[in-house]
Image (tube, rainbow over the protein chains, first blue to last red):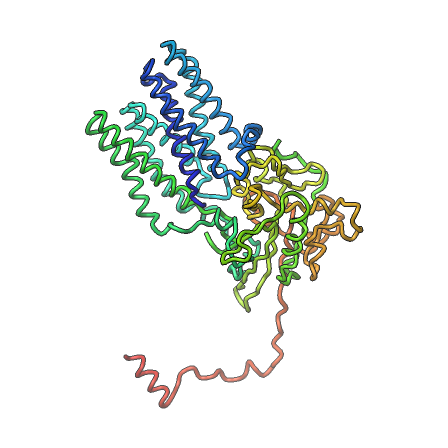
Length: 290
Length: 248
């Protein structure tokens, strides 16, 4: 799949933002006044900024209000509805903390649940797609959730939960890569079933329908950059998981946590780029590609 | 709502005969011609006369080589457009309700006024049947020429999809696949019509007729089996050369 910048920024920033908002909703840390303002400002900028970035790749973003209508069937619509609900509820909770110095905790808990559901809905946009076998697996939502809550914990200076969540995320990430590498083959879909001609013999794409490029190839048969995938996996895993965990074991001092957070975010950007770039869509089979 | 109808009264669709398709791409051209000036936004081209031309098409013809266990390879031309699936994954993922499957005839359509151009339906389609128009920013797909098949201003023989009307080899057939007595259903039954990627559970309405088995030329030379096989090892100078070169 084409690793579009807007979608990478959206999933990383919104994930971190809603991860942070989850912790804030739980009252961790329990701050009021200006301190609460800055915490929520960061949470809302990341969550909202990510959502805004996701509209950059739309063909007709001015019609975005319609995207809230199909929550019964569409994960993308659910994600939109849940994100607005989470931000609205936590916005009220934040007003209480910032201006009245009171903690309307039931609102906070509700908001935290909505934020977690938002992260799950985002991941399900990808995990639901049978056409992309690498994504179509339970590891996708678990990994998104663990990374969002782990990164959010670092932002909220919840160092111990952050440490544990990053360790768990690391384990699931390794599992996702390990299982993901074989899933296209295991799906049983190949050029033979795609064309229905597999029963006759060995099928080879002889001539494409067009000599130039097209939307399908640009969007779903992205092969550029995969050659460095293994190296990038190492870099992503070290920056996203290993170094932050190491730093947090050494110290919980503010500069160390900030350094761990920065490295984690950079690593997550690389991980997310790979998430798209390494995903193979079955439509590539029609072009004899993966 | 972008939920799918429980069932549709009709299942209008295409039956494509891979045995008779000659790969002329006339259906591609006629599809683009009809659909660029009728239903919805035109099918735009980008850099049409430049170095890297590309454009939106609702129907494309691939060509595949099939090498059987024994015998010569076969070349098969393979037209591909929307299969109007019963369990269309492109419809349910749509966040705005722009994508829908019609209850009355099963045609999958896009309401372009509601499409935000997110592209998720194209990701959900295994067949590459949907293409985002780069000029209009909305998703385009085969409408089964919904503006022809019910169009009483056209002569009756033209009330079929443009690709079917234009196919010079009669490789494309249009009809109701829910009606077991329709011509297309009979054709599917007689020729073992197949689904593409049935394992993905999309239940396509369109069917493909596999190429008929090739004739086998019978052995007619009754003396041939008695002939000595030709010697495969060289003798004399060539034999020496062969051995000498092998040793180097």
